[in-house]
Amino acid sequence: MAREPRDRVLAAAVAAAGRVGLARLTVDEVAREAGVGRATVYRWFPGGRDQVVDEAVTWEIGRFLGRLGEAVEGSPDLRSRLAAGLGFAHRALEEHTVLQHLLATEPAGVLPQLHQTVPLVLAVLRDALVPHVEAEPRRRPEVDPVAAAEWLARMFLSFLADGGRWDLDDPAEVQRLVDSELLAGIVTG
Image 1 (tube, rainbow, N blue to C red):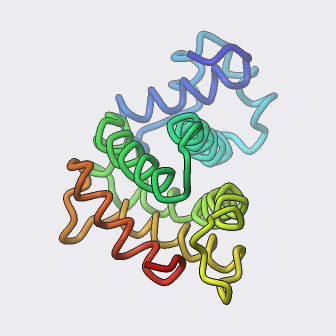
Image 2: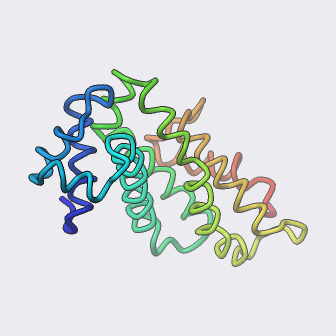
């Protein structure tokens, strides 16, 4: 559970959304879940329910990105970083009970919320990848690290959304995906 009072309200919004759904989520429900008064929620989120939902989605994605960063920390190279990141991210999304519940019961409510965060997520992933693309010893000389990192971030999210023919539960398969689809145009043989 979150330590800061405002974060506790955001965590409560995520938990309550998992229980009652986005459509039935109210400020009263969030306040009850967080153990604070309704006025406290409005003091921190003057935009009411819509602001709470928007910020809770962004907050939860920020937590996910933080855990993703921890999961790839210590990866010795770009290849292993991408494979570890894809494996972790796939598992984390599959195991996120609130997200899976909302996708199953209210996709029209949650998908637009997630779509709004895509530019932020892409920017965070791109910025995290740039130094690793720059440091990649097998990087093709004509490859711009920022452009390559942007492309990798977009492909990373694309495969998370739909693994296609790739089994993201199989580490060997994820490694083949990284080699043949993500790094093929960026590194030399």
